[in-house]
Image (tube, rainbow, N blue to C red; front, side, top):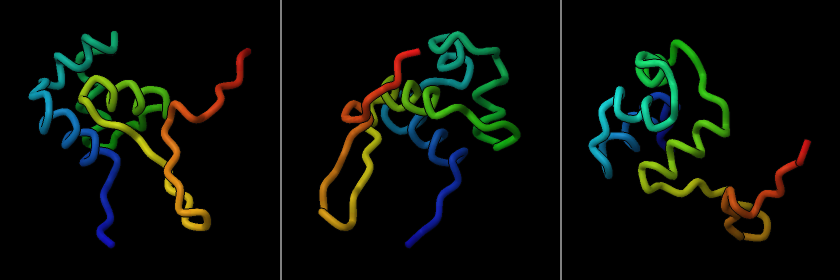
Length: 83
């Protein structure tokens, strides 16, 4: 199984389906200009919530696969704790 870094996955999501520039994506997420670059170079780590937002903007879906019961669960299936 091939290993991928979160930075390479984020860059792939950004460039494959949408052709967003780092600046475009940062603006859509209300992030500083260099933040997406920092994530892709792995100088900083995005929160899970930010990863989900990037995936949605880039037309990707994040899934969790349960090996035991062979079921997929999407992010939408997760219950969010309301604070």
